[in-house]
Amino acid sequence: MLTDQASGLRMMKNNKVKVITVTGGKGGVGKTNVTLNLAASLAAQGKRVLVLDADLGLANVDVLLGLRVTKNLSHVLSGECTLDEVIIDAPQGMKIIPATSGTKSMVELTPAEHAGLIRAFSELQTPIDVLLVDTAAGISDMVLSFARAAQDIVVVVCDEPTSITDAYALIKLLSTQYGVFHFKIVANMVRSLREGQELFSKLTRVTDRFLDTALELVSCIPFDNNVRQSVRKQKLVVEAFPKSPSSLAFRALSSKAVTWPIPNQPGGHLEFFIEKLLDSSAENREKVSE
Image (cartoon, rainbow, N blue to C red; front, side, top):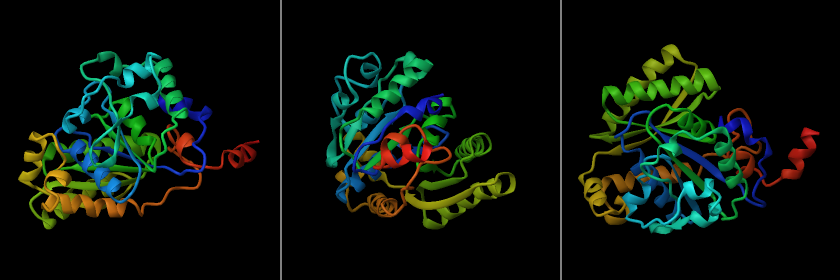
């Protein structure tokens, strides 16, 4: 597992990084759109934002943004280049770490390759304030590891039975097997605020009954035809249609996200990136551990 090998990581100096994983269990819920529009909105607030496309075998972040990619994470793992060398500038002032597409080996990384990815992050030099991780669909070990690595886990759901079921399965696995108890919920593509609240209630009725978790509804993103139009243009809706209902919701979500606290010390599931990215005081941490 990725997190088993995180103890050797070191941290970027003089910088605390907020790590947010965006996931959903089911594909097709708009997870990547949420990630990218949130990233662009955070960048518009002056944050240095890096997006990691963590769908390692079916990358689509670069496609949605219309970016030309020459190197990706597979080149980092093969030793051809560093992580900093694959980072590309994206619209709205954010940066992207692209994954690869159609490569089965990237989905089935060996423990040594997991360690290589960790080492790559431990050597990251690019200064950032926020790392947004866009996971693959499903509940694979890789998805669970990226979720466990974050300070905040954002679960995107839409008003479909399969979306609610798969979101519950993801939350159940993370809470019962890995001790993750706090989840932020985004109700996506809803027809009204009330529909979003009802969708959240459907999910919490099940989690409250069977799990020891705390869920927070952080945003209701309205269904917006402008999103589909912007995807066709390979643009973000906050860029192509900045005054549309969904754009306003994404900006409101970003204003909330900047207030989410960053822990002073990693704990529990905060391991993979966090020992590298979280705390500017490596020396203090080392003294405590002695």
